[in-house]
Image (cartoon, rainbow, N blue to C red; front, side):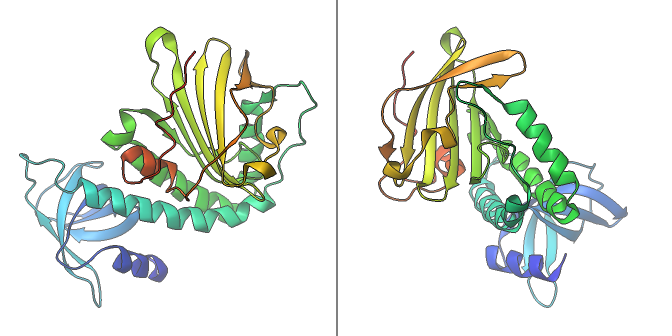
Length: 281
């Protein structure tokens, strides 16, 4: 583990705590390289765990090196470590985001679409990834951030709601992107939650109900009076061959007090959530 990551781990955890790690590799018969909330550490193990399996450890020492002792898994309480794991993942994700997002300004966004023209989301993604692949440090930071996002998305509190994603190609020019594609409900309708930050309006949240070829949207912003709809909410977006109209249901509303991240809100770790607002087809 790099020195900076080691110090971040020491700030996030304490000696004596139980943590859960996912086995990444087995360098020898007595050790496993494990991923603990985005931190990769070498741990001693008395078992023969397969790659991808999850082990529970006690942090027995933090200095001069981190020492982890494998614990027998309590099958009667499989979620005993979940709150701490969530906190560790959110902390790691925030650090990975802070390391990656300074690169975003160097990844030039495509030109804005003409009025009435649908924004092609697949094309935005292709352009973004092509620019990213040409910047090795940015790509490495993006890979770590994407891996942590996938691990967070697999948590029961998010996976039961739908698919949680990091999609920094939309809207271009924003930071702090978070996206949740809700599971299809009655009649195939699904909720979509989008969060990001823009210079000027600050934190922006969009809640949409997608059904058929239309997404009805409610928009919230820290400074809604400084929000230009065309910066992020075009008349339509294109998903493959399908064109979806975006219909605002009301003028942008103020967010009020600062909110935690969308993931924290959806996991129930934050207050002041906008997610309880009802949308109807």
